[in-house]
Image 1 (cartoon, rainbow, N blue to C red):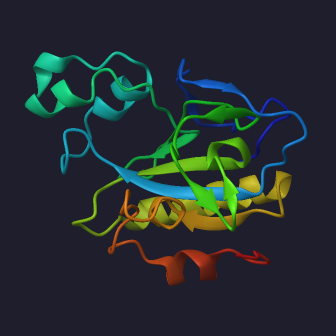
Image 2 (cartoon, rainbow, N blue to C red; image 1 turned 45 degrees about the vertical axis):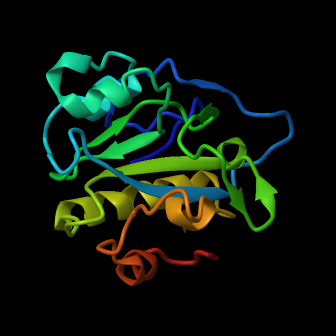
Length: 182
């Protein structure tokens, strides 16, 4: 895996999201934010996340969708349970994944971060394939942005978010990444 000069990861599906904009001038990418998501909640393998990130979620397909169909959110990457990686926003652009957030005293984490969504929830372990893909993806990002730190959505939005949740194995993930400061 390799990020090209446009911020696209070679060898993965790219499904463009309209929910992004330009990063502020002079801002460098120095944070990777790990999330979890499943749509409908707790159900895996469907197209709900893709539909949410592409503004094509159909409210009538599930009662939960009524409250979120109008959201305009995205992430740079989505890692499915089988390890497949889907990209929605080039890393050179600002994806709308973090919302109100702060990391080490800096507000607006979307400005300087790359968002990775893992298909999952706060209530079940992540798959071996996801950890393998997440490691490869992280190493690809670090080749272009070696100064990146790691954080969960809960860390940058405490009290508002809980992901990636208690079943995410931070020790396993961090120990799989060499030469990372976090």
